Image (tube, rainbow, N blue to C red; front, side):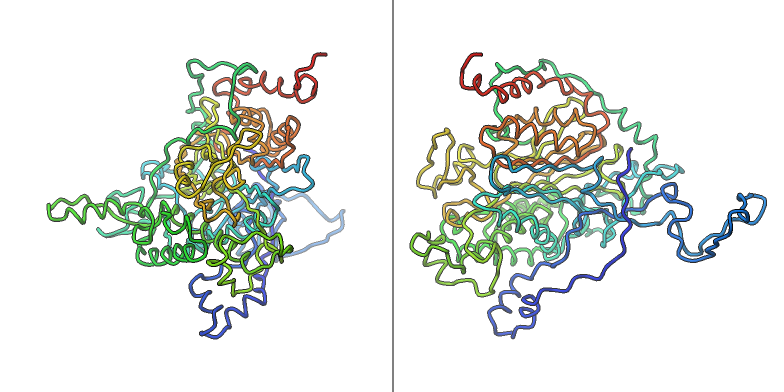
Length: 624
């Protein structure tokens, strides 16, 4: 495996908090600002970790690098002699172990593991944004069986092995794409702050690691609930294990697979209504049910008071039923068992909170803060200004905290969002071929997340588009939206918007254009998938999912792949929309071209689209 560039950084003092945060914290108990901050604790204002921390092996260090003490001889050249093993041993630095050297590897510079490309197309400015790095939250990966975590007396691999986070867990990686509309204020806010909301929500819900073993009969159930109470040995991944994992992938071509041609009528990624594959069930990682219910109850009540309309009866999927949601994981089973307790049957069901509840709370809370911050601002044109959501429900109680989210003037636009969190059961990184991982996606709008299977080479979508034409979305909004309008391009719109879920868009909140994320959990085995792609609608609106993954297959690195996808989508684009592509390497990257038809399955179709783009007369039906 190729190694990412190394960057050894010195720890710096944590930045001081802004002045307005100090004033809120020091406000009197009776002030509205203090009351508001007590209901919603402020997110930590710290720099985003766009790197991952790791140990590097001794073979990666220069023999004289990192010397903190010891002799510093500057002998003349004629006095220096080669080291003789029979003589005095080389000087060593006491207390310094090169095996435990910790470095920070900038993820955005690791072109063999991560790539990103942005283009504004033919627009005057770019409203898209992205984020990539690690966040501080407990691991949510499924723990491996004991038989798979013991390697006997194998030697430790010489590959880079990340260390754990502050909580002792393997680091959780965070990748996100944001597609703004009506301006870039909302997408920039999400890029800079959404990860803070996720971290803070994990702390408020007291989320615990899914990898920790808890003794006793009443220990919290996890993905590995066996009777073995012994601490397993750490996973040791060797070079042979990586090769075995890659060789174990049975690449093949499915029956009926054939190359696609221009005559095939295919839906682009923005047009498809296909559902993602069924996801894995949530893991229960917190037993603080009463605290979670209170947090959820306060947030849903604030949405009802601020907006009304749709939010008076909306039911978040992973919120407690007592807070107006559809129930925590396992809550319905617990209620059913409680109601039938007279029969004497007990199923052992447990209610709990997982990372899905945390993500849903973080998304709704971030959207609430953004919308409420716009309410107290004045529109630049008072005469032509649209009323924000509802004049009585909103403007009667303007924001009292003096927030400046979104700029000095009221922002009426919004942003879609797709976030992917990756957690591993061991410190070995998720791109190692022998390492399984868990991917949890949170999605709002029409940005997309794709995986590529190593064995068949097929694209696997993890998200679906939230458009008015989607049956589930049409059913959800039908009782609140007056009509769905079809524009001149044949696209259905609700309140002038192409998406039924988004951040911001305050004028459409009452009819149900919310930031309720669609969540999906995927358990990935070793080398099962080759890579992950996150794209905005500027890419998915021009290419099919399979075309996107086939372009990535032909690239040598994820960085080159991201550039190729964005440039091709921009080249054949007819509307010149902003285009963003993020490519993340997974365990099966080295065999990405071997499954199915490789990258040849859509080559003829892609060549045809390029010819059409280079010949506008043919696109209009003309003849040369």
